[in-house]
Length: 220
Image (cartoon, rainbow, N blue to C red; front, side, top):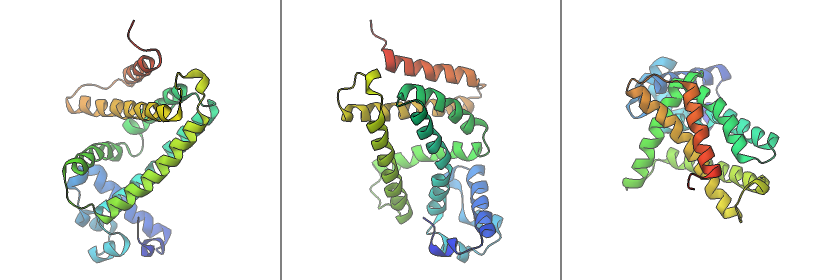
């Protein structure tokens, strides 16, 4: 989370710093990005950066938090409009999300975010080093928001269309659906890396097939 001094800046200067960080994080893998490039692009002294943010991760996670607001709001709106039909919600949301990640304004940044998040998870699982303050703050904030979202979904699910017998099982389903969505996006990035041409209609079709398997099963 940015320091109070950042929020006391004029909005135009705040945006200039954020735009510089977005440019840097979009240009190279997150772990290869540098504060030096960010301050150069923003036209501020390096010392000023540390008056606004704890470190590179701090500004990165602030950007992540802002980027996910619109998708999360849309998802919850679709869930509400579909009266708790979780599978219909995911089908409609994926149409929006895949275009956002592949051709949206921040497509390059989102690609690097996906790659970076995988890298971070591995680090957290296998590295015993103490977390940075910014990473811990982000995780705490993100976990609180995710728990609120999950609680709302569980409470308003249309259970008449599911075989779930309790709310703890529905939480497993929700997590599985999000993992399926993110895995589908990562499949696209792996295909791009191999030089395979991306067909969005095929990606959507494959995602819907995965949902059908979850919804109807594959065993006789």
